[in-house]
Image (tube, rainbow, N blue to C red; front, side):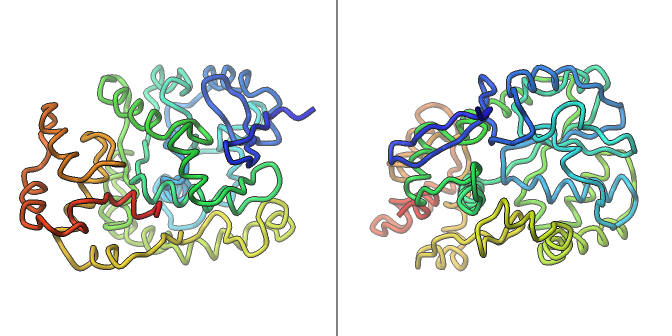
Length: 343
């Protein structure tokens, strides 16, 4: 009998989860009791020099994992140890934790599932963020490219409705992100930094320098530049694809699926192309992606701005000024960046 649950979404597509109680795991084959696994990891023995890397799936875990290891090692060489031994969600407790130093332990757990020794030993935590549009598109391409029990064969629109209704692995994205934001704001003891996918993509050297400073390593700009070069998408994909045996690829990925490292296609529209050229549309895009102003699906941008203003959330005046400058243009007024992905 499999350790995972098999459910159907409302469209009849099979969804398989490891039931961890208040968290739904991917059906990783090595975990036999997901609830017990969470309990064991809460009491995991950590070292003060460990680094915990966490965030919702597809927010840059593998990318940051390499960068952090390179910073800790003081070298732009790629990690050669099996990642499974540092992936807390994937491996049983007795097969985790390589004995060598340094260790970058990564997970997609929520705040309240982190090992207790994170606080007791002041372990450094790197929490990852990424805008919801790119996160969800990447997540869809990931699960849709898998074979076997990890596969989810829904269409994009079916997947999107499922994510809006109930979430998928690790639960509802909105609950996950808002819970982490609230807990990090309230926790005065946790030693953490927030690293966004967008910041790392826009200014890789600068963001790596911030991570270097957080770790207290002071490696210098030259090494940060070499790490940024080593961790460019094309370089990482070539190295990591070569490290995975071809028979393993065939077991977990569909034919022609790009695997873990890919540039995720996003449905293009003429409006999106405009967005790259029009600074006003870029401002509106950033407004759409800011969660503190509430949901952006199903209402106009102006209605969302007015609702945020009514509730004292202080939405940017610049956004309203742009909307008022384009009173008859639906490209500016009607649709959020998330809705471009759906339709």
